[in-house]
Image 1: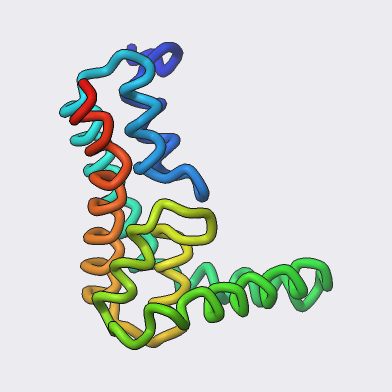
Image 2 (image 1 turned 180 degrees about the horizontal axis):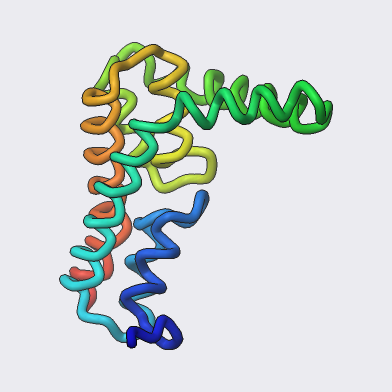
Length: 155
């Protein structure tokens, strides 16, 4: 039987799916825990592709669920609209670059950027699922490189 306790592979994949952490920081966690840098990057890359696929397929469903809940719970309505307005405001700087701007927005390893925010943004912009998947995957993989290249150069 597979034990998930003390399984660093499972920890990296699980962390990669958490909003705010995502693969870019899960890879660093794996390296910190002693995992080979290349293996950690491969696991993070796999997680980026899977998360990008899931979000590009189901972000519309998630939006509908949140909107239905927010009709009943006013604080969720307020927070959700504040989040969406924040996404739109932050993306303004990158908007002139089109798809490349959205990839850069997803790739930048800062709070309120990343695959989750990029998926909402691509949904708001009306991008199709395939284009959204490409953008999210590309940005997520680039973000892994941005945070791990300094580690690779040091090690």
